[in-house]
Length: 350
Image 1: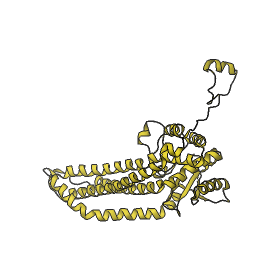
Image 2: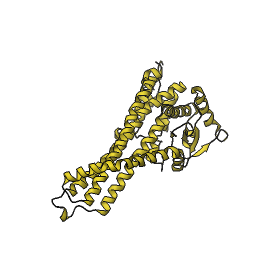
Image 3: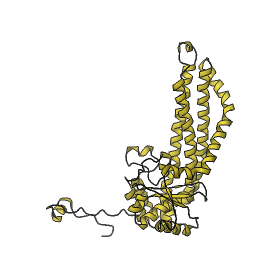
Image 4: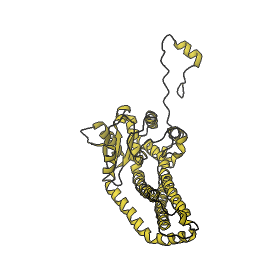
């Protein structure tokens, strides 16, 4: 069965784009939550009044502050749109690649782009032994695929082609642009929420003996709780934007290369060796792998490697390479190993 048919690729792309638009709108709702929480904290600092009065006052004043909050968020997103690739390069220390400096990487990427009529993105290399790659940018003038030096050394051409095709699919599907928007807005929520909570803890107020009979203490607790909830929801929404897209990017990579086995082999090599030291979490969210295969899977930005391999086998006809038999060491003979463990597993049809 064709991979596009198996995954319902284009149908899912359209559905995910619609869902992503709602999620992005949800992030602006979180900005409104932060605005209300901040207003409630400020009113608790300024006024000695019962809790319902403080809530009503904060709700009224929020509508005055909301246009400023939305404008500041929009400006932040606009700046991020203009400078995101430069910021990513600065944060990671990656360097540009030309056809002359790395003909292998450039040739593989160019061939894939030609097959789909895509503009060849910028290419960058991040010097690290970690095995990973990610795409960034919000338009054709910015789109960049960054691969680590460790990945280039560890993968053969077919495996590297699968990884590049995965990142090109993120670009084709609009995932990269949406992830950058989500990271930018979630960053606003996290930054202002943390700043307000820290300032409240630093300056205090509204909790002394003179507040008995007022609702200032409760207002402070509720305001901080709203800020914490906004931050938590922002993180969860960012995860939701990334998680389902990895299956689609894997499917798109197979559709592009017609080689699911190579992508499976690449993911097996990447597994457990993907962590890039010193890279911000927002960038790791955009990488081809950012997930320990353990209990933390429920909170991760990516499905586990095991789940992605299962999907590639079930829907793309991929095969996990057979493990090589262990070497015979010391005086242990092959016959002894076979007698204890049984014959080696053979591939399909053997």
